[in-house]
Image (cartoon, rainbow, N blue to C red; front, side):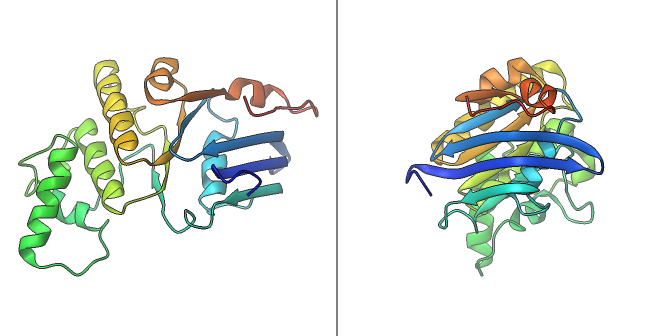
Length: 218
């Protein structure tokens, strides 16, 4: 790392999808405890960048460096909540815990996790009965239980109505800040980005620059 305060450093000369250039000459750094929102339209590679950071996709021509104490503690929250319908809320959340715990300790952990995301009393609920916002809260509780140092958020609020989106956006920011987690958040909603982020990168500029112009970290 060129800067000890950076959690992630990205320098991509070019990333393609088939014959399409998604982005090029793109540089981005994420500092410890910082939340960045990537704001822009669909189809321009925002989700691809998150997948590259998570190691789910190649980095193309370029380099992505993640601080060594962070690389094993990366959480990913997808656009659609990924929950297991045969497990209740409590058991879905416990998937984020790798420790062997007694039943008493598990129950306490579940209660604390649900209280954190304002779902107290939901432990035995079937996930198929949850609203979209409630489902994303369960996913968030599970992700936080794993104690990530870097959290990647891929339009997690896009399916919610405006009021629910704003409320959960505020809560996500509060929780991420409380736990000193660094985060990269993807959205096409400017209001959501303004609520969640410390810094916004306008991805429209990245999307429009497929002819070799520079896109520097803002």
